[in-house]
Image (cartoon, rainbow, N blue to C red; front, side):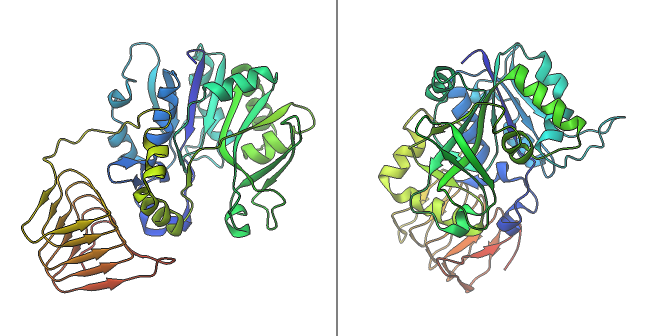
Length: 373
């Protein structure tokens, strides 16, 4: 995979995530106690042997840049290749705001052209999984494909869930025969994971052609328009996939990590998931603390009752507090006699003494970053 570069597009803003993405991109959203969503996508590329990765940003990217830093945690602080963060900029040809992926790729074409790799893997920023691209690349070459779409067959997904994304149909030879972008009535359950393999020279040509015609949507204007002209094939991924496209899916997939099978699938199946190191002391439990079936990160201080929760670094839970079925992000403080159930607390939230917040499993209560209740 040393002849392959990676490009991660983090410009999409998801209004369905509400307060969680007001001050950060989806890629920078905390997940699983210690990680950000970008960690999984970036680790997948590094574990595949890729050493040249570009991350295209659009808005609210300050926390993302702070988290990635030089790329040292992913072994991407290199003299040749490495991690390239590509924020928007204003020039004679570039207005500094992308209307879609094609415009974003075209604005960073100088970086793409000077990269020596033969192939490029494109990825969005909302899919959480653990995969290596080695088998997918072999599949791409064996099928002599122009473009390979990595997809997941969602056997239990609802029509509403599929209608938010791109779905594909394939024939018995794995060739993509139909593509639907956010269909009202999807005719397939094969969900595109927003990951594509393509030869770099072909990618440069397709992006230039679309830009010259004022086109900006990769799925509609590259894939759908060229379905009969190019050989587009689908590679089926059979591992665990968390599609973070709403508050409900974010809440559900965090709490799914209590399952040992799903935890192993996500964090150990095809390699380690790397993240920014924050040196903290181990979690501390008081004499009257009670914790069960929970993910507790380092730096937490627990003196109350915790059950079925994901606690990020530095969370403090006072004596007499009861926290159940909740996701509590970094440095949140929960004071005495507080009751929380089915709640998502963003970073640095303080819940004052005696407050009760109870949501529903299908509709959790979300408290924005830095709020004091």
